[in-house]
Length: 325
Image (cartoon, rainbow, N blue to C red; front, side, top):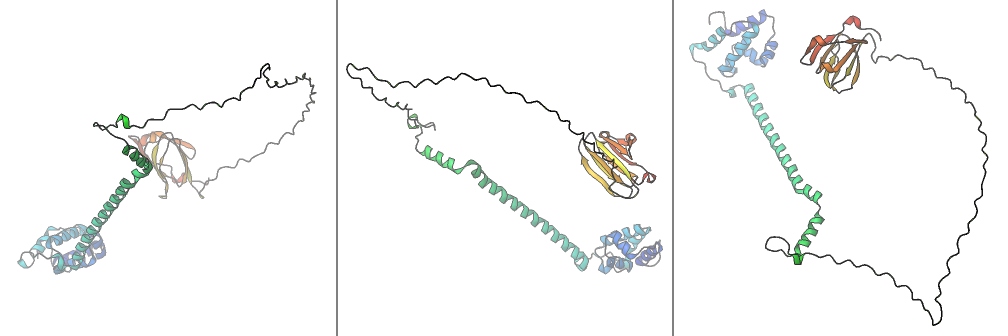
């Protein structure tokens, strides 16, 4: 049909795919299409495919995967039957129509979700505006203020008239109770109650207290408890290595061991101290390497050669360092 290959377009695609030992399912996954559409391309069944512009894109992508020239395929497709390519409606292909329906339905669901969120936020804002000021201001104070304002007269400037302002009552000092009168007859002397007798003063008596002798009793010497020095046991079993990180500055840190296990991923604060266990070599990422002190199996390690603008990404250790600890 065209220069560069023999047979139909589909036969040429099948030969190229089989030459690379690639399955039809693999082609479909690479093109993000169903196997039915790939089968239609290989079978030259263009009536079940979407518009020619999409078919040309499928052929170009297919040719790139199987490493053949795409232009001869596209030229042969456009010249098939010596007639201009007909435009196929999306509705003629059930699968394409289903994809469009799914896109429209997803768009409508997103719009409905945003509308519901907007309504919920509006209701919450209205409730806050309507009820929160009343809770904090106090309805009783407002009613009392309205009653006081209702009984006052205002002048032309909007200020209460001086005559209508409430005046506090003057403070009256309560009178002291009257003392009973003293009746004094003619030629008599006034009689007064006799003063109370003065208290009797007793001479102080010297009391001598003999001090008891202090007896010192020697307490038996306590035997010092002997605590055996038990080494700190690693939380994991089998040969492994230890990694200790001490932070003098806040830094982001990521640590993975040789098995790919994520040992530590966190934002460490200033003063932090972490001891990690895993299979060497470790892979580290330090967001601020100048603020981190590293000890690997008890020895200090300086990542100075790996620093780039404060960030250090490097590996430390080797498999031979893993031991029972």
